[in-house]
Amino acid sequence: MIFLTQVNKRQFKSRIVQILGKCEDIDNPEKYYENLEKLSSKLRAEEDFLFLKGVFETLGSTDRLLIINALRLKDRCSCELEALLGKSQPAISRDLRKLEDIHLICGWKKGKFIHYSLVRPTFNQMKQFFDQWYVSLANWFEDLHLQ
Image (cartoon, rainbow, N blue to C red; front, side, top):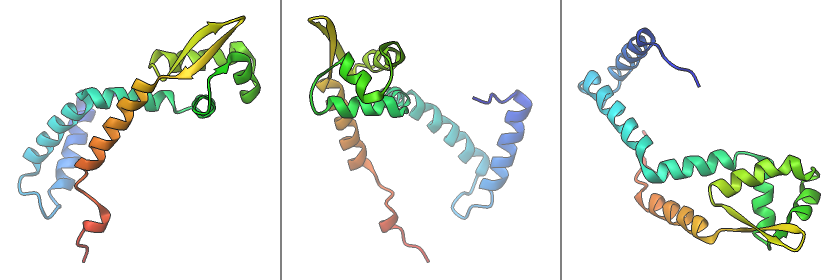
């Protein structure tokens, strides 16, 4: 992550305000920029945003996506996941822990092995968020009146 110094922030703001000033629909670019900063803070602090950010960061791995994809069919023991991923148990334990930490999966001991399954309430929460988000979309390309 790149952190901007105060000087860089002022330069960045100045450049963006200058660009915004060239937009047809913006009368006061300085005020518009300030409103965008407030909106950015508000959007970043939303509970659903923070939840999905964690989910997407966790699912940003092919191995973790493969684990989720395999578990959607049935619960699996750790040895099955080792075979599916072609990796040793220690190598996949970190991925399993990350998935458990955000409650996408849950593991339990069954015999000598740990079995894993998806956590329905977490997936329901994701579905609910996407359903609400989809309904709230107001900016569809097909609805634009391009000249």
